[in-house]
Image (tube, rainbow, N blue to C red; front, side):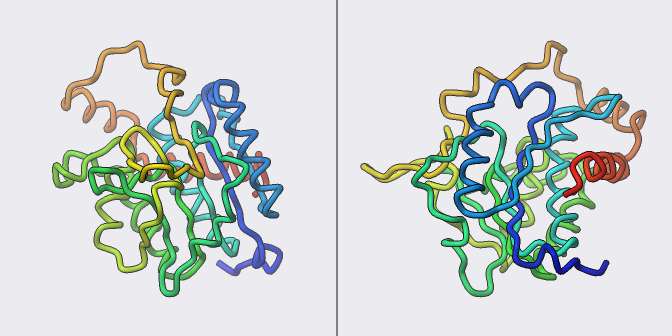
Amino acid sequence: MTQSSEFHEQTFMFSIATNGYDMIFKHCLDSHQNYALKHGYKYIAFTKSPVDGISGTNSAWLKVAIILRALKKGYRNVFFVDADALIHDFAPSIESVLTPHKFIYMSIESSGNFNSGVIFIANDQRSQSFFASLLLRADIPNFMLPRSERNLYENGHVINLAKRSSIVQIISPKWNYNYNTLLEENEKEYILHGRGMWLDKPRSQGKTMTFTQALLSRLTQGSRYFLLKKLLRFYELEYQF
């Protein structure tokens, strides 16, 4: 795909806040908008849902499709922040973490695993290849990963790929301070992710599916990869990013 020159000097920042998250975490989304305005980024909070809805799992995987699409469009950088992450006014520009020969930036938790709730990507063929490979895993269940790398939604696959990639750079936990993150004494986080807001998240009222039920559900619904392609078309038309 030919990259558009209009995006070459832009950083595209986004969040996904479907299924009422835009109302629950409005103060967080406002902090994203303020941060983007301060640093000259293009910001979109994807809050709409298609007519037939979008599940939490598909919302999580959707960010992978959007990141890849934005990179292919030619944005210089892409910055994803979870909807329940609050960015403090004193947070520096995300470009301050740039390191030569590194193109994907994430914090790790105390477990040593990456948390994909805050991701900064510098556009390069290698970062595009990383997210193209990640998207191809949308139909691979987490149980096929090493036990130590399993995590919710797409995060397990992010961990698995990132640990084996030379283009991924670990950044300070100040950029993604959550329940599983430790800071040094007197350190102040840049982004407060989920702490004190976990109980605000809506919870499914249904029972957890067994492995067999989950497999049958996936077979019935069809390929998540192709569903994400469909969802991406919807959001691109709705938001013109």
